[in-house]
Image (cartoon, rainbow, N blue to C red; front, side, top):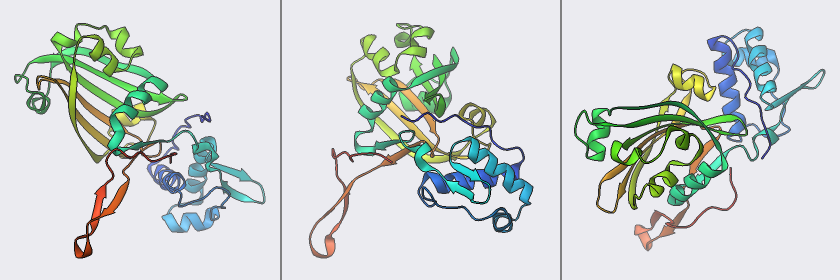
Length: 267
C-alpha cells in the first residue's frame, strides 16, 4: 500500500471548498492521472474565488500527493497516491471484509466510558431506556491516514470481559466472540451525512465534508442486541460496491443484487 501523508486542509472556507471539490474529482476518476488541471486564473473564475485562494487549494493537493506542480508545465494529477489507499467494499460481503479491514489497519481510541446509551440505541438493541453500556469511539487509519470514525455501544455484561487496552488493539468482533458471544445476524444501513467539528478534526477533513454513514445492529443467537455501531467513513478512502445481474423475462426484466458475488480488484 502506498503511504500518503495527510496534508493539513488549506486555510479559509473558500480554499477548502476548492480543495475538496478537486480532491473528489481526482478520487472518483473525473480527473485522470497525468491530466493537467486548468490554470489558476481559469480555476479562480470557475469557482468564483481569487487566485490566492486557488493557490492555497493546489498547495494542499500537492502536499497530499494528489497533484504535482511544475514551473512552466502547470499542475498535473497524480492518482498513484490513491492506489491501495482506498478501500472498496462489496456490499453483499461487507461483514467479513470489515473484519479483515480491522485486522489490517490500526486504530486510535478516542474515548471510552460506561454511560447511559442514547434512546435510539436502546430501542435498536432492545435495552432499557437509560441503561448503561460501554461506549467507545475509535478512528481507524490506513498507513497513518484516518479513514473511519467508529462509535460502538456494547452491553455492560458483555463488555466487562475485555479491557480498554484490548479495544485499542483488537477488532471488536474478535473481542465479542472471545467473550462467548455467538453472533448470528446483523442489520445495517448506509446513508450520507456531513462532518461536524469533532469528526472533521479526527478524520482530517473540513467541517461540512460529505461522509458515508453506516449504522449496524448485531444480534446473537437469542436475538439479543450485542453491538450497535455508528460508523463514519471518508468517501475518498472508502466506497461500497454492489454487483448486479439482469434477471426476469420480457417486460419484467430488472436488476437484482448478485448475492454472494464479490467484485474482483478495488477502486
